[in-house]
Image (cartoon, rainbow, N blue to C red; front, top):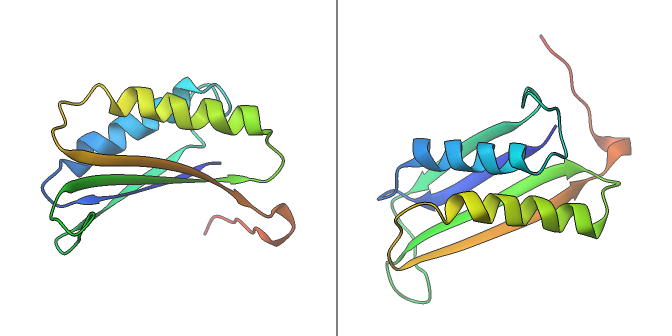
Length: 111
């Protein structure tokens, strides 16, 4: 179920980031073992500022259905951090955020 949304500077390889975030989410063992419920996508930005400078950045927002414990959310963010740390990044701000989706208002259907 998780929706992994990666925002990053356009100088980074968004396909590689998507793969790393997907794998980190799978590594958390909080979702389907085959990864079939993990959705990951990236948005690259040409225009950005990090602390007033044009420094590379990665911000991952993982939206999950409410009900997970703080420990589970921490495991998820650290699993993603571990995979992203495998990259050869230089002067890059990296952040991961886990956000609850309220179950009562979430809808899903296939067309």
